[in-house]
Image 1 (spheres, rainbow, N blue to C red):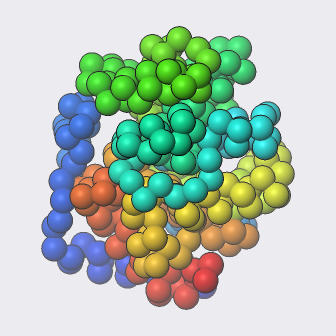
Image 2 (tube, rainbow, N blue to C red; image 1 turned 180 degrees about the vertical axis):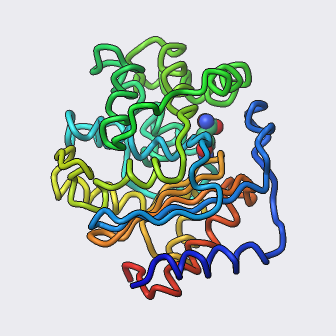
Length: 303
Ligand code: GLN
């Protein structure tokens, strides 16, 4: 498989598509991003790297971080995490409040904001220095010691936190947040503010494609745990567009409102895309087009 040629073809083809969507407006700091940035990075299971476009420029990974925080929580709490968060697609927007009421404070899955806040609470409880330990974990799995929070983005999200604050308080009222609500929100805003390049993001997700083992050879999850998280990304990674992403792309993946997507084909490759223009579901329009073309041209979807 000549990934280099395929990436070139996909990149050129996607660039001719009509411009749809715009950058996220929910976090003021993110509106400063150039909407026309576009990068792709693919790493094969053998460790070969292929990048194109703005693939070496940092962007806000936002909700893509939810796949990494659930992996970290899963690594030390194992199946216990499912006592406080479910594994069902929500069919609702990422920041929706409605299901929490009749599901008694148990979020449908760890990728909607409510679920990610419960996972954040677990990490705040179990990590000694939650924010630093999360960064260390992400630096370790990515092999990139310079990965950091963007404090301006974290602050901007804090200033406009009303909906996430509502979710966290609602969860707390059901007893599904153990720590101080503001502490959990602060951790969550920092995790969302993490910046990575497409290359760093693809490397961070390597263990999802490699039976739980990072590129540097460290086992962070078991083969069975990774199978479960990949299944969750497949069914829930794109919120109420997870069915469409599965239909068009056919890979497990996770998106974020910074315009990033990480997706993977187990035992074959990980690919990360970045294009900040979002569709109405909050997923990167060009990122989805890119991955659809990639799996079509390579014939490599898991289905
Ligand atoms: N930080 C964003 C929020 O909580 C993340 C949302 C996303 O990327 N879908 O609203």
